[in-house]
Amino acid sequence: MPSYQQYLRLTEEEREDFNDDRDAFHSALVIVDTAQVRRLHYLMKRRVKANARRAAGARAGIVLDGPPTVGKSTMVKLFAARHEIRLRRRHPERFEDRYESGGLLIDYTPVVYLSIPARATPKDLSVLLADYLGMVLARGATQTDITNQVLNVLADVGTELVIIDDVHFLDLSAKEGRVVNDHLKYIANKTAATFVYTGVDLKKSGLFLEGQASSRATQTSGRNTRHAVTKFGCSTDADKTEWAQTVKALEGSLVLFRHKPGQLVKLSAYLYDRTDGSICALTDLLRESAIEAVMSEEEAITSKLMDRVEISEYAEVTYQSLVNRRRKTASARSQKAAS
Ligand SMILES: Nc1ncnc2c1ncn2[C@@H]1O[C@H](COP(=O)(O)OP(=O)(O)OP(=O)(O)O)[C@@H](O)[C@H]1O
Ligand SMILES: [Mg+2]
Image (cartoon, rainbow, N blue to C red; front, side, top):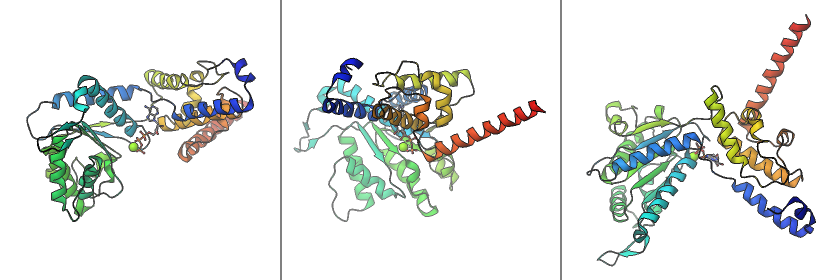
């Protein structure tokens, strides 16, 4: 950052270009290693290590279950990225092109990430895996063909971590539900990888856990460990510290000329009210507020500025009802005092 004085001396065009860069930086913001991210990464890491050299057969996977927008996808992608970066450091040779005896090119792919589209069937799941692996499928290939090819390729390319995001989108209708469970179990059984699944309301969904056909569904639930992913709380001191630390980390990434460090942390309670403890709402609010601070030339994020920035409908409605409730309580109190 130049000094504010230098900034003011820039020509209009220079300033516009500089601010474009700042907007891009604020738009990207940073990913925060929240306490939840650290805790769940630790558990995933431990599970991956425990599975590494285990004999063939199903390895215990991890299920991250939580409401929308609590940061599940971000958390697993961050884990996947870190896992691969670690491998690149430790085994750089594996990432060079290798050739099998048949002359086949092996593209080492230790981590696979799939995001499940709505109402996906077991066959879709195999096709998604094949797409990720860059496989060319024969026209008219059956589910079994595709699945078998995928399993072979997963073994060839050394996949050790498979992340299946938004697994609640798998079709769990009575007809498909059991097939999906069986298919997931089959794939997990036949690969040497650790599977991490994320989704919404998985406990009740019949996926992994006791569902329609309880004694069979437990075949998958018996292998996977479910961890809840939640919003930030605000009841205990530890909750409040965790929230303030997250705000602090985000605040630290701002590139604004008149923003004093700590200014946002002091507004932690306001930020909690505005966002209902959602990391998604918090980052949306700060991202847009930072850009507003540049555009309006205020160069600092204050509560007055944030009042002008609307975020998601859910967060706004929750905030409004909180403000109304407080107003009612306050006026009831003052009426009581007056009488
Ligand atoms: N640790 C984090 N640090 C910074 N920002 C985060 C973090 N986690 C999530 N976010 C922000 O919140 C947004 C929503 O997160 P994410 O998509 O990971 O949630 P989700 O739980 O997967 O939601 P859904 O259930 O809708 O798929 C992200 O786009 C990102 O901006
Ligand atoms: Mg997600």
